[in-house]
Image (cartoon, rainbow, N blue to C red):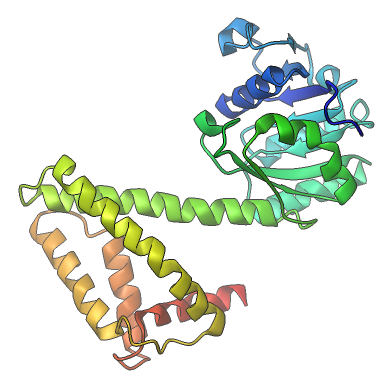
Length: 298
């Protein structure tokens, strides 16, 4: 394992779309891949029969036996903990990296259980959709001891893109993952809602798209200022008054209701802004709505 260029054996436990994407990339990089899935199916079912040196194991312990790196990619951490217990004896010489989705609390608990079993253990979070795994835009976060993370090097190189090692706190990868997904899903829903609002007034989605892309670019430019405001907890730039923004939000909610569209997120943001207005002057930056969120993470 000290020579990251030599072929390694990587076990993949869980052959959902992400597990298959990881297996395909690792095999393409020239490593031996041993896969296992709870529901037994042939390699042809997953399209892995032509992916390279890929074998199907009969059990999770058998897949982990002799592996240098074991990747667990199942539906949640309850399922992954069961697998960690199953492979504890056969994966003693490997590093186990768990990229299953979970909350920060769940991932810390899983890491503690793995350590109690004597395993070298890393928490991972794949931050991109499956088509981007292995490409230049692939981003995967890793947390664990320096020695354990070092042992994942063959996997990290095979998956390409950016490997971001975030330290030893196993809560950090899922916290960043879920925070980014919070923006992503809210943004997708906001786009669909805004497209419906435009359509209600005869504006086709294809015509609206360039305007939506423009406001997303504006949002990107706004994020550094928001970051500075919440770090300083100071809301005095004068660039976006609370009372002005509340008026805009009222218009969005009213226009949505007039068109028979659920105001959705706009109503939630309007209510948060109105709550802030009850305690802060209207001349305060709109960013002050963060004050009702920030104490949660103090």
